[in-house]
Image (cartoon, rainbow, N blue to C red; front, side, top):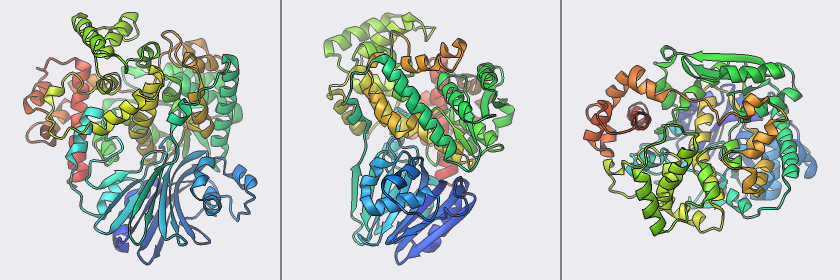
Length: 612
């Protein structure tokens, strides 16, 4: 099993590839390997997790050469199923032998997270593939007779010169991430559940989606709730177990105080004793250590509590955000990085609860969509709802019934794309007139949402499907991949197992949202493992006191990055930026803080990554 960095290409100078490889050392500090043949280069950095002595890469078999980033948790089962006779315990050997036997059909057999490249001397191609959910990244470019790919943008962009793609920067400010694209012209991201094959002579590129959660939403089955609860428990126990024991090193768990990480911790503790668990809290607020401590005591974990004051991280923010190699505005990247850095002092593998919210409806914004298909409102309904919402006072309590009614009217008053952005990222929504938009970059996203809207799915299924294919791989999994791998730590996500990914969409909406309660089936499952004080809690995660930071601790840093001539002024009205800085704009404090943070993240990328 190997967490690592991969880098390679066709018609790229060997020296250029070798100079870029150290930029991936944090992904694989234990070993490096290279394969050069004629115009082909394949390079690898390795973080040794299992089969430490024999799992070296690039891995060669017959006429194939593999470099691979990931974990295949069922690879030993696949050896038995396909009668493979292997020389090592490495899943890399299983993968390359299965590819030799099955070709890309092997992808449907794999339970795990992966991004890999295979050079096939028989077909004279290099093929790339990415896992179902998009846990492991891979970027590529093809131009001027060259093709290159790599695990991170910071490494890939050092192979050549690239201009800024201004359309994608605007997209970042509206979508809050560069969805399925990058801030660089010509550099693309291979989408989750997709494979690519490129001819090494003609550089003809073929792309094909091999897996989509949308297909499983269309296969809904009638399953009794108690049977579904039992099956989910079995699948989750199997997933946690496989992710615990596919390692020669000790495995720990992040513990946020919510039910997702609580269930993972409980199940893991039933398999191993003295599980190491990690919780983070910021001084004076957002401290969930008390709830995490309750779970820790119940399961007798070795609990490490990380208390953070701003003085500890004021010098870290630029470094943390620079690791992403692109503008990255999700502020929870800060605690995710810090808890990963602390966890690495104790372990090299950690479990997390990623994916539970997107699969089992954990966000409160899903509740209105569970009762009304807000993507299907007609023009008359939109107009009426928008007028009524404009006269209502803004809700103070996000968990109140009034907030539910207010959000319902607000979302019903918008067209599908705007309804989705308002309910999800909500950065510049309502202030679009302050953005300088000459390129109209919404065509792809608009088309995607229209396709989902015309699919026959329910309102809840639609927004969950969009989140899974948009928000999860482009924000949440990127956040955790970089936060962990920048610290040479491997993160494993039991909720994203093959079987759970393909089972959760089959369940009835009422098993996910019941009344105003989110992820109902997980809360019922949690009663088996966790005390009521945990199961009744709203969604929790590693959050930050962003409003406080922007108004006090980060004020000087924000002014430094957003005053004067900035890249942000290419996209956001300059006077509006200054009014935000001086707190003169008529914007809610939380929204003001979010706007400033996202623009500061853009400037940090521009200065620390692009201009460097």
